[in-house]
Each structure stands twice: as C-alpha cells, then as structure tokens.
Image (cartoon, rainbow, N blue to C red; front, side, top):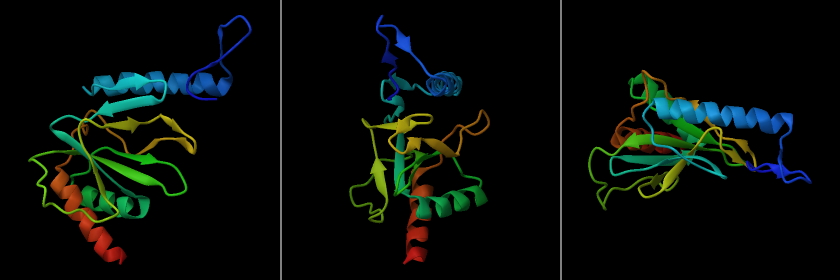
Length: 163
C-alpha cells in the first residue's frame, strides 16, 4: 500500500494500524518542518522541501556520508542530513548556497549536486525500501544549513581516503 489509503466498498478510506501510525508521523513531521520555517510541500508521494536560490543539496553514498557528517560535527557545521534507504543507501546533505555554483567546480563522481528547481524528500516519506530517516535531524537550535563548500570539501577528503 502506498501513502494513499485503500478504499472500502463504500469508497471510504480504510486504514490499518500501520497506515494510521504513518499518517500520524507524517502529520507531526509536517507540523515540525513548518515550525522550523521550512516551506514543505506534501503530495501522495511524501513530504518535500523545494530547493530555492539559496539552498542546494549534496547526495552521496552512506560510506562517504557518514565520514562527512562526522567531520562536519567535529567542526560544529553539521546541518540536516537525510538517509534514503535501499541496497545502496544514500545520504542527502542540505546546504546553503553561499555563492553561485561555478561551472568549473568539480565534485567527486560519487557526489551529486541537487539544485533548484528540484526538491528533496524528507522523512517520513516512504520508499520501496522503507521510510526516509534523519542521520542528523533539524532542531530549533540547528535548522540552518552549512555552506555547501564545507560539505563538498569534506566529501572530497572522504572520497580521497576511500581510494
């Protein structure tokens, strides 16, 4: 079953305990994101944060992402990071676009930039492998995004150590 509910013969929604729990988690997450000032959009597919002119995201495999997050925490620069479950789990680092992305800026092959007008799925959006989750959740004291240049520099270092 997807995020949308199945219907009964009378065309009313039919929610099982798991669906009710997910719907409750979804409602709580949306309210929390809005309290942080995030302009999230909600669709049948899940909860999404549209990227704007001042925000970007960097996607990378979990083995690199875990090192990058540890290094950002050590520098007190860690911002929100989502985990997309799957056979090849990926981590998504939300970041501030402090300058235009230069066309000559090179990211390691395993690191991809996600830019406006794209959007980022947020927990508890479901995938075929389970719910997205936070590796580093936002909070009222830490809902800002680190500079993308810091995330990229640490990703480069992590990839170099991986080789």
